Amino acid sequence: MPGSFRIGKIAGIDIDIHVSWIIILVLLTVSLAIGWFPQLYTGQSTATYWIVSLIASLLLFVSVLFHELAHSLVARRRGLPVKNITLFIFGGVSNIEQEPKDPGIEFQVAVVGPLTSLLIGAICFLLQLPLRGTNSLLGGILFYLAMTNVLLGLFNLIPAFPLDGGRVLRSLIWKTSGSMRQATRVASMTGQVIAYLFILLGIWIFFAGSILNGIWLGFIGWFLLSAAQSANSQVMLASVFNSVTVGEVMNPKPTTVPADISLQQLVDTYFLPGGLRYALVMQADHLVGLMTLSDIRHIPREQWGQVPVSTAMIPLSRLHVVTPQQSLSEVLPLMAGRDVNQLPVVENGALVGILSRDAIVHYLEVRRSLGVENAQSDAHNQLSRSA
Image 1 (cartoon, one colour):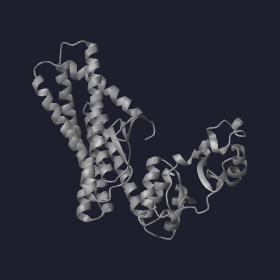
Image 2: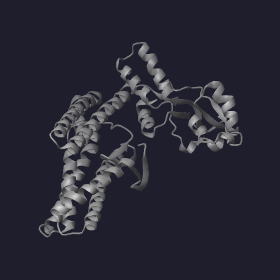
Image 3: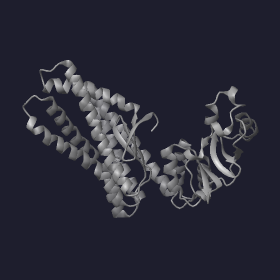
Image 4: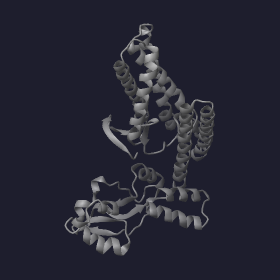
């Protein structure tokens, strides 16, 4: 997710924090420090309330992290690759790079998150019972975590795709109908209806006088609406490309450049005359990297004559390589999840082509012109926006 930075790794899964997480952490801490703890647990100093509020806010996000870890660990155990977990303004998200292969896996991955939150809430509730009536701030923290985790678990069970409850709904429809595409459409439509209800409720609450709560509910509704539409488009793209291989769409004669020429030679001899935006870098007959316009712009122009391509390129070790036999439905989530526009295509260790978003869009344009599948018009629009 753009705007994120890594803070560590758990069970081999990268943990990232988005800058928006800092905003919600501050808002939660302020809300608890001036409202929750002073009203329910009197007699403490202002500094104590602020410290306890920060601790409670951080522990809430630890709970969210456990919720997402549950998703990620079950997904990985079921053979789905997990890129990372990102904490952001709405809580957290597990970046699972492939859609599940069957409804059973979908159900297991989706339901384990809310169950984890409900379990954490129950444990915190039981732990705070001996401290009730003692005006203990520790009891206050535990009660807050119990309440918020139960609410988090119940909220995620709302059948609004792509929330966990929406994915549970999709898995049940998928199991019944046998069609993931149909199940996704029904679940996403349900999610969009619920999102509009959130937005309307937010507007009503706003004009009823609770301005901040109204704005927040409307914002949640907008987020759910956007997420449902995006998730539906991604699944539709995957279904359109399910029978299409990389070899059918790739450019079998990509532009290649030597690794030992300077950036100035690269620009003058290849990029400007050919109107290129990228080129594969070769050392003899071996692929060693990728050079893009963005990589060139990062080098000061006065240094172009001295800097070799091999220094400025993206090395092969950092590139994602695919084979001609792979389905586009497998490759598209990789391109979207890793935010890459080009993928080298290699077979038996030899470069055989390159797959780019431009090539995929061109493929769709040709098929649409021939009247092949109306659904591909939407796919074309979705890919054109992201290319």
